[in-house]
Length: 419
Image 1: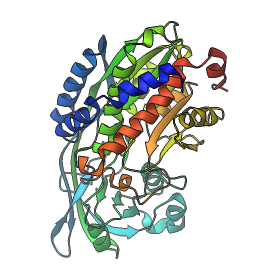
Image 2 (image 1 turned 180 degrees about the horizontal axis):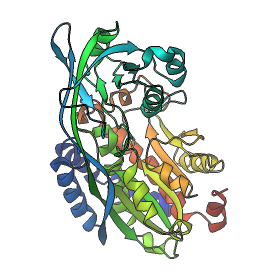
Image 3 (image 1 turned 90 degrees about the vertical axis):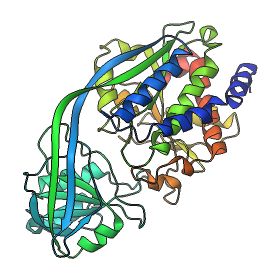
Image 4 (image 1 turned 90 degrees about the horizontal axis):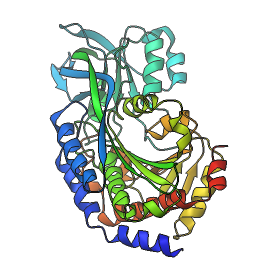
């Protein structure tokens, strides 16, 4: 370990602000984009960044949405079932829709295809899956398949009892779509047998903006390593793992590197994104606004999203074949066995950097570990109680080793990662 890395990690390890920032973000609530909870969190985060260096706020457009009512009623019993509208979902007529349910089990495209005409005009039930595994079929893939096959509504079922409904994005972004809601395991069990339900969703599409907070700390050369984390979350719980963990760590990393970055080969740009939970809309729009030349100066994107709640960290390396071995060497330098998943997974803001040809990774806990606390993401159980302080600190130190390697690596070796 070099003296520079040792001193950097020492500052990071001694930073009491890591845990304090994590709890302060949780205190803001779920931080759903467009709410007072999100506005409070952005104002707080901007003040924390301003204590490190010059910060700017770039208004970033996205397809916003407000929901006045979401209700699922079992007509046989008259019971209203707990539900959470998927962000941006299509509305129903004011009087609602009366539909028969059809349970498709996992609800993957092959189950949708096998159902054929039986699903047309019905409310399809599909199971929510553990989001961080090689075998996962994303919620929006299932929703798109059901919509294309003629389903009238889509219900994604949280598989674990006692947790309540699951949230998530519909990915509709103001376009065409069908009503889509998350429901609890208990509601899913009730509706499994072809029950008749009434769905009511009163939603309003609107043009919206979210801040993108940018802290830029120059190094010796013109290039930047882009460190990113998203601030926004969901109305259920505290959005603690997803993503108060990643944002708190990003703030701590910026504090630790600020005293020395001007002497390093490349500088640091920290981006705090909103509207990530809206199908990655915030970072996509921000990157598009930077112009064609900007990606060439972005040497690497290190995206921190849900970095605690599981014992092992994995880098999702977006299809960049050389990135995984390079990251594993950097992590091994501090005694960490870093997991690597090569195929691009479009589950956080790193995917938009990868689309611009920038070597990009998401650092995440609990990959291929469905028993981990990350199974509670997008539910009311995602609270600070799931995050052990030492686990967050260890994740921040691993992220620190990766960041330091990116800031100090030779130009040729880092440029080769683009291949």
